[in-house]
Image (cartoon, rainbow, N blue to C red):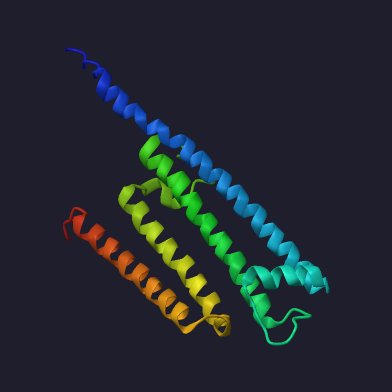
Length: 194
């Protein structure tokens, strides 16, 4: 039995080039850290504003783009809702980052060898480029939905053109995700029926 010959230098170099993605995933982890800090800063401002801190309230109002004809002197339901939606948005983007980091590394760089680990995400056991695309498209629709909801709640502070474009962009995301899912389903090998 002849041993399999070692691949040539060029194929090994090309295959090893996948490790060039590692710094990219490490950069996304740094971006995740920035989102965590941003989340806690906004949450602290919300809590401080709830206890009457006007400086924290001003920072919140500025960060969510809320405008009112009267001076904003205390939290109202709209401001709280917009801040909470912004926090949910940060969490959803953070989830998207985790999917890209973990799923991308597992799919394109190297196995994580998490089989049997109690904290292994259930989706990771069957992740591939196709599954990752559908999951990312779904996550982007969720993020777009939160942005659109924030815009509609604060609609008085936006021009009609902005509202229309955000709605059209959201619809484009929906149609793109459906197209990806349909394409993925058509390209999947058919399973025999019982």
